[in-house]
Figure 1 (cartoon, protein in one colour):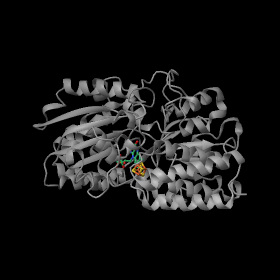
Figure 2: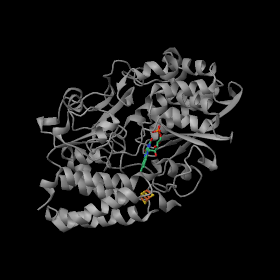
Figure 3: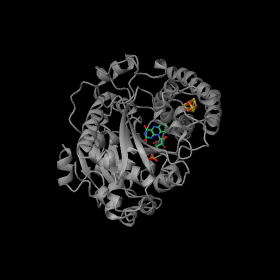
Figure 4: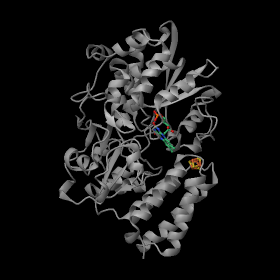
Length: 478
Ligand SMILES: Cc1cc2nc3c(=O)[nH]c(=O)nc-3n(C[C@H](O)[C@H](O)[C@H](O)COP(=O)(O)O)c2cc1C
Ligand code: SF4
């Protein structure tokens, strides 16, 4: 099993980050980035994207944090400093949502979440209330909740900040979800590259226990338990069915669906998997009502969203924005443009497999469907800026190299497809362009991957590759 993971036997002492955000900003410190290229095994994101190129012993301060939305749901308690302990959290109004939830019927909590329009922030944007309802309606009363804190998409340090700076909010959201769905055991899966997040979550769990809020009879006479799991280094384990396998001690490979996890997930029992940011919205929804949440945002994207900007921006940091904000505003007002006044070549929002956004697409509004309509993706909300330091062919190579390295190999289209793409693009990169035959192979391979892969890793790779070659055809073809 150890061979499946990158960091099973590796201690994270001096890791150099080669995630896409550090790659994009490599000119800011080429020496550091080059070390990441030589390092075995590779480290694909340490979550210091606001200070990249980065390394694990860099002693970085927390990122700059600002609220840019009409109302703050997620960052209000941590704009200036973190929350240090549970009593401070309570003094800031924390835990009143849990108290209120415990006075409600579980089904009414689910109704409120449905009414809020909240959709999962892990990247798929499935309606959270519907997911909970599906598990709630299962006959089997043994149910599980998994909080996904793997945050594998480079450029994102959203869940990292939430777990490090306000683990109490994450846990309060998880306890409300457990009560609503009927869960006794909650697993929180935390990326190994985030040791501080793990430590602070552990301390917070112990504080909840000492207040009798986790344990026997803690949820209105019901028991609840939180188990922290540390990742071992695999991008694909962020995918929910792969995570279920990993927690069960199996190879962290995705499962075919159906059955969906809400029908048969962890230990083949109904299981809800929710992202850290998703679950952190829950206390506010219960306190203020689903309707108030729905009033924020636009179209099918409701509420606020955390976005993390990489170090190439003049003002990198973590921002809470409302859905519907213009991408141009994010780049030039929130991020204050690109360092050294360099022109923006492209953005990649939502991780390596998201597809680029061109400068002439910046009038697009931040929303799930809106980004899909320009063949890009919102993903987890990580915004990576690129300058002319990165050509479209460089980006293509980085993406297929990453996709091939992280492919779990379970299904043929992705196992073979990523290697095929890598060999073609590697050759072309040495030459500086792709010829027609190569473009044809890339296109055919990506289309098969997009339609036939078992999980979002292969599908997303196919989509991203097609988006790059279509948007930059003039620049990559000769
Ligand atoms: C390859 C791959 C990697 C993923 N990595 C993550 C991750 O690191 N964190 C996350 O929350 N979701 C990740 N997801 C999405 C999860 O499968 C799942 O949709 C999510 O955790 C559900 O929570 P949500 O409904 O709150 O978004 C990944 C999906 C794929 C296909
Ligand atoms: S698409 Fe790739 S990562 Fe997903 S199951 Fe297939 S081989 Fe594994």
